[in-house]
Length: 435
Image (cartoon, rainbow, N blue to C red; front, side, top):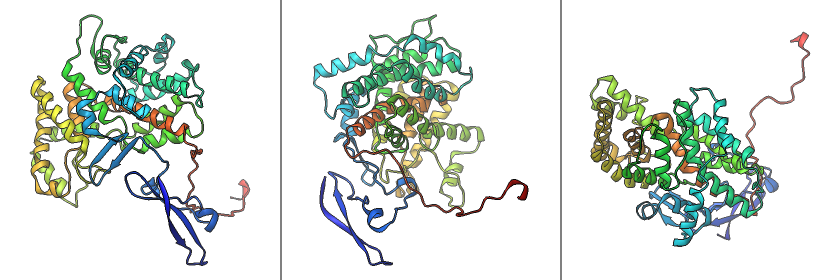
């Protein structure tokens, strides 16, 4: 990161000027260091939503929305999706390098042998209402991990941070599956070490003690791909929340729980659920699909097609083209129920419109990763209230990698945003009998 250039800010009111360092990253826009702005000129900056503000320096994920680029530790997402596995990507994000064969085997073994929860935590689930949302359960249980695994929580100890990271990656599928099963009155199923990471999750989700269950290899492959594509995504709302919580030296379980809470917001982690709800609404309306397409084109109508376009990617979502292939493969190989088949047919008809209609093509309103992941989850029989839970399961490695990076950053400080105050000032207190 070069700082040879500067940007000069001149205050027109006073004539004062300040030279601010201009950082040149390895990729992406140059960044102005405004640290001296308040000290020299007495000004804060105003940037709602931090749309133009870099809150940290990071070497984990590079994202270029204009060009449709996503890279983990410098490796293009398409190469990782096609040649890697989720747990190998976890190793990469956490350690900043691809593992050797023996290292990957050891990492997989470590994760596999830590998937069980402390038995006392199993009883912890019974404290929730029987109809609790799985995300509500997940927030509570992940936060409670600090009460059961507090033996390695020195956040300034590298070995302790790694142990915690391994525990989170290993136990998240178990917590996610148990959250689903508790909310649905089904008995808990313990993980099996001979299964892969995603096979284990499917096994814990769908198997029953009364009959044998073998995870479908294609479903496990599709889920592994979804996990890779959602492993990290730069400084989004939930990742920024994890960093902000962690900046106070909060324990990593608490920091990750805060990220899950932020992801729970429908504007962040609920996009693929919104896709399926839209498909249901379209089918239940009895109206032709074209009516909804026309509404989406009508500027005076607030209706929009969910799962098309992306806030960050102004071109094509690079993850969408990767997930599209396995989505179509899955739909060709599966046997859908009548209602499920109708929803999938509507989804494919919408995809055809978006890829061929000039209105959508000109505006780059292509199907995004949420569109396809929603369809895949629907085809897999995963209920909508579990969509965001699986998102959280996949993003856990990104959160803990970002947190770990922050712990080693000499420039990291406790987060303390400033504000543009526009309320009353200098009021005199009025006694209650005179109001």
